[in-house]
Amino acid sequence: MASDRQKSAGPGHVAIIMDGNGRWAQSRGRPRLFGHHAGAKRVRQIVEACPELGVKYLTIFAFSTENWKRTQVEVAGLMSLFRRYITKEARALKEEGVRVRFIGDRVRLDDKLVALMDELETLTEENDRVHLTIALNYGGRDEVARATKRLAQDVAAGRLDPEGVDEETLPRYLDTCVLPDPDLVIRTSGEARISNFLLWQSAYAEYEFIDTLWPDFSPEIFSDLVGNYGNRERRYGAVPA
Ligand code: IPE
Ligand code: IPE
Ligand code: MG
Image (cartoon, rainbow, N blue to C red; front, side, top):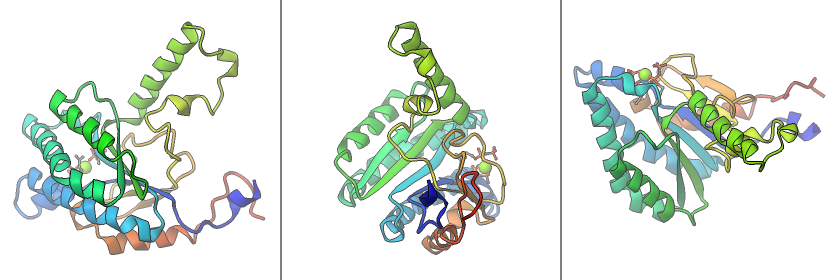
């Protein structure tokens, strides 16, 4: 696997933990939801920047399984924002060649939102210019637990031989089963933690933790981070040649 150790031209799959909306709003004396709206507006620009930067897959963390702990006002406001965002952006995403997928557990989301998510996935399923994956009610541990449950069901039903279970087996049950692993994970807002994002998939990802709050994130910053990635050598545990 010598080629794995060579410097990469660029990250084909970038995942972003879009953090800092609340602090951005609070620093302006505005309610947290104002920051979430400003943050949502940023997404389009970042998606549009992808093709030129060679980023084929972009995965963004929009709402975690832990975010239900927030006030009812914030959670309801976010759910309403997701519904409005999907409705408003659907046509542009379709026309710009963006294929949209959602990962996370849909069971706890309301029916109206789930219907919009399904529609957007279907509407864009022929697209291949950029693959945008939105993590909504997503938690890495929850995803692994749900995957394990289905894997166990297959074993119990005799469809899967437990002796054959290896590193390639579990990913087939994850929400991300059709996606490559992320090459680069970016977190905005100065927090240096991953907050339960893509736990299995990020085993060998490079990380960038930057101070910028998500509503201030720009295509220029994105381009710089993607550029930095090309200077890193990924070794996958081997000794450099
Ligand atoms: C990220 O911004 C968006 C979501 C988690 C939905 P935050 O809302 O976490 O913003 P901060 O971290 O409080 O500033
Ligand atoms: C992570 O941000 C989740 C999203 C960006 C959707 P949080 O703000 O929820 O993470 P913590 O609470 O700081 O770890
Ligand atoms: Mg936060």
